[in-house]
Length: 223
Ligand code: GRF
Image (cartoon, rainbow, N blue to C red; front, side, top):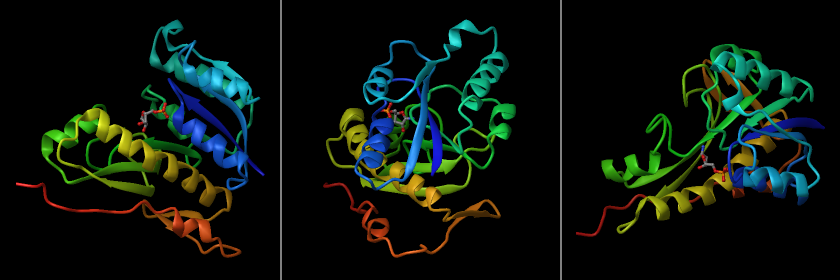
């Protein structure tokens, strides 16, 4: 069974969704450790309570990003994971780090990439007046919030939405697509060709795969 290390910075709800999928038997991976850059993050306590090994690599203890990245990579390598899962990990990782884990480094971003990379994606979506917003799981490349897209979850932007309501709707989709992306990876079904992800057919039919696609709704705002 493949193993993963999950990197978090805060509440860790995506990590929680991954652990839930493992617990219900729908995601056959082992979480070797959860690593957080913030001591005291809520997600750390949750992971520890779930019996997962936890580590803290506090970015404030390092003189520069390269030193932090090197320590973080060494901490991950102690667990020899097959995959490294960024789940609400709020530090930009340098090129050396990304290359070290190339092809097995995943991220979730709360927008339909390539729209709205970076921070404040929900605010930007509202400001632009898009009718559809969502989230993306992708392989990480050195360019921020970029890389071969594995799966996206789309949600409508509704009249009266604010950042919080929109973020909450997107988060529901996040919690569906991250376990799904990892499920495909665990089954060796993901291939990257020319920067695009192809999904190989399942070895045995898996009804959960297609059932996991979030609904897509595109509607104009009421006048
Ligand atoms: C999520 O919206 C994730 O996409 C973004 O930060 C948020 C983290 O949420 N990068 P959580 O820590 O997984 O609850």
